[in-house]
Length: 317
Length: 93
Image (cartoon, rainbow over all chains, first blue to last red; front, side, top):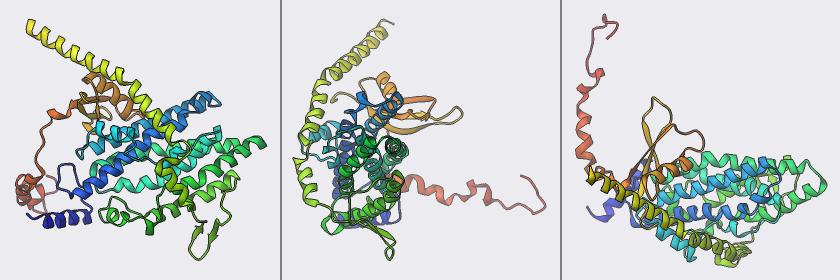
């Protein structure tokens, strides 16, 4: 069968909402797009643990500490689900980790911003996880089976993350004036980077159309960003804080909130490695990986020894 | 992680149900695979029992053979109870 007709058949399967499974024929570009997207997503989960890990030892109560630990542990799990999904496409875990550690692979640029106060942990849960959920829910219907299944698990767990963050902010907003100011300051810093998480505007996002056609994506970047803004404004009102955008206003005719222009120069600078914490995040990952090497070696040696024991006792019997 | 094999993980969500495939992970040995599966796949009461099996011990059918393997079942409607017409007078069978 010619490549052309294979591609036609593949596309018609996708059009019919059939899932594509690892051993099915797929176009090379589909495979490459998925490997890039899923591994970036996995890296984001792993690097995303770092800004929050910064606050585990300083959480204001045992309850907050337990919840934060549980959230961060979930993120390690999400990274694992996603790495496993990417591996079904023929890329090895080592290759992916290597690409992250050498800076070849990207991760979500949001994690290159610092967490300065406890309110930042609340703002991350509310805004960053909120934006992530908006992105991730449609991915549960992605055409590639292992990715869609991983995302179902991720989404199930993610909803507690957002509530955990919102609950932190709600409590602080009912507290002292200083605590409320702390929330406002954190939201001022996280709002715009959260909007950037959806990626460039549609007219500047050349690969989006193909991903939509392959049903990897279900909505465009701008559609998802708009949904996020519409969902978030009423939540900000309940907190009693201002979102830092003077142009933010409900548009009766559109039935959506209008919002101001995004500073894409900042976004591309952070993606290019010039954000406030890019170097620190990567260095922390590399350090953890290198300092964990002896543990991995010891586990391998132990497994080897156990295997030999089984063999020798079997030969005695 | 170069030498750590891939394990497929199966979870029984409660007694009376089959173990069901939930995902995979790398581990140095089967015990570690069980421990990691417990940490990753059963954090919210998802299971009461775990199976792990090294992925390279699984033999799977080839998707290209799907037609040959599964299509013949389509024209064997006589395998289904609805193929057989019963008299209206018969109330239960």
